Image (tube, rainbow, N blue to C red; front, side, top):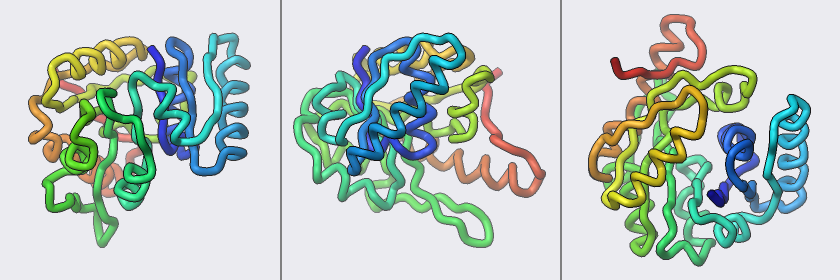
Length: 215
């Protein structure tokens, strides 16, 4: 599978790149081309240094879009609109949104846009794309800890059954992850708001990288 990661030089993007490039062809995108090349080289060293296969390169965000059959928007919510509006060629592609709109006040709170969720906003901005909310509940630190298995449940939401099936297959290629169909894109708000909940649980119980499982 060819995967382009937009905003790939953040912790989540780099962690996803290190995990996914062991089984798939991945391009790590950034607004800063030199930063993308540096990050991809460092990620490759981390993976190949463990004797693992790695198919990973750095490029611009637009080149990541052009490359990928699946495009991941690994960007903070505050940059979502500006970044998406700067890109072209996403029509017909599967676009994964792991974005969680939230604010840190006295505690973490879910702060969705008027559309109701970040994923629904992405679909409004990209009416020709097949948007799936996925990977929202995995901590950045856990993505990058590639010596450890990701023992997490991954609920996904989307309106395109074929796109959801592709994303579920992608999830199954990452050891430890188990994907679950959580319904249409309208339910993405229920998934996105889990992250501020997990952060509050971690904070008030002195825990790290809290995740979820369905039993």
